Image 1: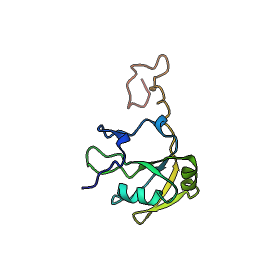
Image 2: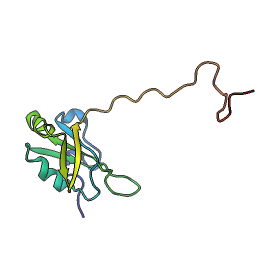
Image 3: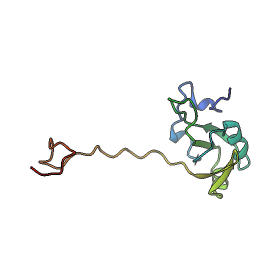
Image 4: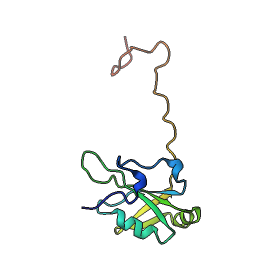
Length: 126
């Protein structure tokens, strides 16, 4: 079996390290299902020291979700990796972007005053 975490920084929970712990992180999208953390580390090590590879897992399938976060030890390594907008991973071209911290989720939608409890699905006629 292949371990999906290369760094102890993820910890036993399998969660991604806090973003503040490493600001030199890239986000790899649209990875093929056969991509491994070893392939990612090998590929991105060409740009500098890789200190963490995190591949989120789909709880239902147990497979990775087709994305990964690669953490570098230095900003110049991240910049070199970002110089190419796509990288070949497991035979597929995958978009790579600078990883950004999750923005606060927007507040839940609330209906305008006077519209609460109106129900839905109708044509709006009495």
